[in-house]
Length: 492
Ligand code: GLU
Image (cartoon, rainbow, N blue to C red; front, side, top):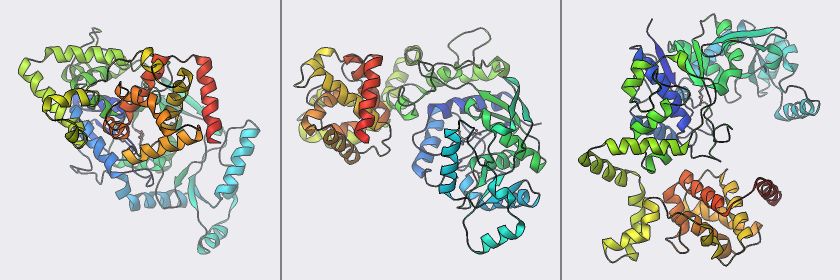
């Protein structure tokens, strides 16, 4: 049997390091077994999926050298490989489940479901659909549909018993059916949800092994039921351990840069990043830390993956990158450095900002160094020298970071607007509000225009600098809680 694996990212937001991590293991496993590795775009959430995010996924996987044999861009026998283009196909499978009595139409309104959820939460019960529409007769359904009432399709779930399944790394797992919701499989807009689409596509695309993040383990009972309803075999499951922040919580952009763009833009070499990701939960049989992907492919043994959460340790990644940089010969080093300078995208966007400010090339560097490379290391004195109380600088940086957590648009005008709203809700003049931000971002009291700078640096890098500045000022756990409360109060 040919091994067929896939990476199935949803194109929402920046390309995530988690996608690269999961892709690496799927890719290496397929390559080790002379199988095929597929790229499938899971864009059934039309409101959140974007073309630019899809393109960023393609280019960052290419940058890493994780090539795919079938995908939306290169086609293949089992296409289309973009779920939004497979719509009609899912409707046919949903009809099959409805006819066989494995699924049912649900006409419950959002209001009803909200009330239901709130009452379940209040009673400390597992939240989920209560099965009201299960009682509808065929005629009721027909009439409601004829009257144009909006509906979704939900899958049926046994009321009692438990689902038992195998995960290659964890062995046998059982989850009681009363913990499993009657999942919506077809939305009112006619699009399938992830749970239906993943089962149908993994089957039709002949996927033999599903390597994906541990966060999907609890969804397996739904998938297994669907595989059974259709009478299909389920692929082998290998749930990779979640990447974690240093405090062991799930890797989040709040605490760590998670965008692949960040790593590319800060000059991490793709081979170093792959090596680093290969060390997440896995190790070479001889425990050697430095290895390339070909060596990884040769030695890959899924049973050596450990399920304890690997920490995404930035200093280790930096160390590893240094090892790789030092191995380059001088001309290679020079070429790659120049390519990085050009490709990090900054230079092009930087020029309009600096052109009027420099008379010679040599003047460019001191003005714009913080946008090309790291900014200067900060010290407490940098903030003490500001005309603001230290505590206020701390508050500003904290609140700005919290506000930027939900910031999607990362251009000059949106950032200006965000800061403007925050400054006024904190009763601060924009100039005062921005003074610690200037220092955090540029390392200087005066720099190139701040919002342009942040736009050039991008979300992950800007946030990393704000976080670092906050660490330099120092925030105790107690203070952080207080600041969080204060920020929430501002929004209300
Ligand atoms: N679209 C899912 C994701 O974004 C794929 C999960 C899976 O691999 O089944 O992670």
